[in-house]
Structures are given as C-alpha cells and as structure tokens.
Length: 234
Image: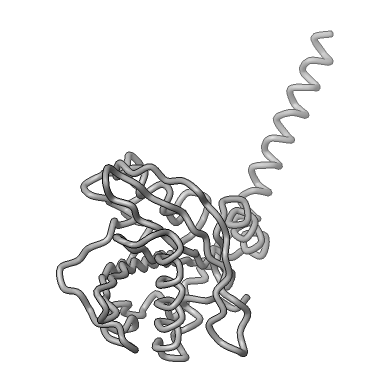
C-alpha cells in the first residue's frame, strides 16, 4: 500500500509539473495593442460634430474611479491608459454624456469594467439590461450595444454601452471571456476599449433614441482610419 501511494504521489507530481509547463508555454505573450496605443483619444474624438457641441465641465462617472471610489485591486489603475469623458448638447437642450476608455491589455486579470460595476460602486441601482443594434453605415454590420438603467435618488440615467476586445465587439461577461480565450489560444493578449453613452432628464425611450442618434453621428464624424477603434472588425 505504501509503495502504491508513493507511485501515485510521483505521478501526481509529474502531472502537476507538466500542467505548469504547458500553461507557461501556452500563456499569451504577444500584445495586440495596435496603433490605438499611440492614439490620442482627446484628438480622435471630435469636440464638435453634426449638431453636437461640447458642454464644458461636465464629467460622467468614470470606469476606474467612480466619484472617488477606489478599487481594492491595485491592478485597476493599470486597466486603462487613456480615458475621455465629455458632455455634448444637441442645441435643443438635450445633453449626452460620453465616456471612452482604452486599455492595451485585456486579459483575465486586467479586464475592462462594465458600467454595471462602475455605477453600482458609485451608489446607483443598475437594472433592466437589454440588448440592441444600431445601424450606423450601409456597408457595415449594425453595432451591438447593451442598455441599462442607473438610478440614484432622483437621478434617472439610461445608458448604452459596448466594449471592443481585440477586433470583436462584446456586451456581456461570457462572450467577453470567450473572446479573450480565443485570442489567448493564439498566444495573443488583446487590447480593448469601453464606449459608454448616457443621458439625464429624459424618459427611457427618448433617451435611447437620442443616444442612438449621437452614436451614429459620432461614428460618422470619426476619421475613417480611426473608426475601427470603436467598432472593431466584426
């Protein structure tokens, strides 16, 4: 019996060592961070386009530090290398808030924060998640977005958002993990971006209609060579 136990221990040790070596060999090593890493989002995202003009000193909830909230994970400060948060008005009294954040590394530890996490951390109740598609060009697939409602006291804030991981667009936790796994099996660590649009002071339906128009106008105004940063290749 003692001899058999020793054999089992040796075999188990060999299996653990082989698994560790295999994991090290298969670990993604090539950063996908493209020219986006050197892009200046402040310049890429226009301050005025269509009927939209910039509203000074209007800051949306940020993904990494919402209203003073500090993430317990020290790695969170490294998730995003660039963040741009702005407010725009359409000239009719309606205001849309835009948040765009870029991270050169989107692996299983450093992953983009969903708005559900950011707003909850800032004291909001987040609910009613649904999906939608926005047609923005005749020659492109509709853009898939997620819709949620954030509420805190008298503040009612409908939100549309999507994430780009590598060349793919994602709006959910599971499909985002599958996308990262797809790149990981090819030895690639994808980069990623979070795009979020929200409004205050309008009904849910009116908010989403206004947000759809804003997103279409924004993607039309972005330079063609930079549009894939927001829409991926899928």
